[in-house]
Length: 413
Image (cartoon, rainbow, N blue to C red; front, side):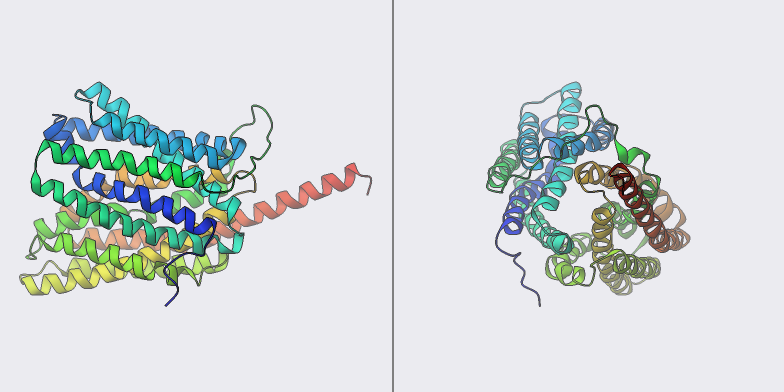
């Protein structure tokens, strides 16, 4: 088994930064809904509206913030965004009305989206190209470990059920981002990339990369599947016990911690990324078919099918993660990593925003047919990513050739 620790140096420091704030994120994810209802005093519908608005703002802001990371330097940008996230979480401790809640949530979502893009640009500047997917696999494993620890802390707050316990969790979350900023400062600075004043965001005109991002967003529907789709399916359509929801989350988190690095080792270019994505699509279709079978009049039969489907789901997730990371980096032009990663990351926001509505309609409303349709759509998107990625790579080669010809002509060659 590969070493679970990333290599010493920038990769390990990046992992420590990831670990520090993912502990806070895990606690936040577990407790935020009840905190905003019980402590802040907001109605669930208003919470949903506010968070939807916030993540919509954050997804739009991620691209220009990524551009700033390229032009001003990713390390300093990442540190400032970690501090902004800490400030946003700290503001939740005192916010008690809807307007201020939306403002704090917009700051939180914007800082989080920008931080993800700046970190990717920072990694690109500190890690050799051939090592980036492996480095991201280590970061993903670290992320899951931190989320697990944070979720446990959040669970303690939920058990206590007191205002003080909830406030303590949010304070820990804010402190975790302060620690993240401190760790990021230990990294070497990456020189900013000079650019033309007022230059437009190139990624918005890059049609091949846009199509890659859209197709990847379809594959990202697996994210709300684990957090919302399966829990609803289990409680509404199966005879399985409700505690299985937690068990399946632990299964997913543990598998990623143990096997994501090993899975990513086989992905080292566009062709191997496309192969991993195709395999991910096949496994996703099989997982959906097995989940559909869990609607049987037998608790043990339902549990068996749900566990089997979850194993297929996490295997598909790890292959998809490795393949999408490789494409996102390989297809981003040098000097615009932050900008392009900011745009690619909008797929996560779209999947988290629209995914719950889509999955609820498909799975709870359509049942078995919904599962099979979901699997078929994901499979089609996974197979389409290979040709589209080759198209995108071809446009990069053409642009590079045109630039070389222009230089030679200018030199009189």
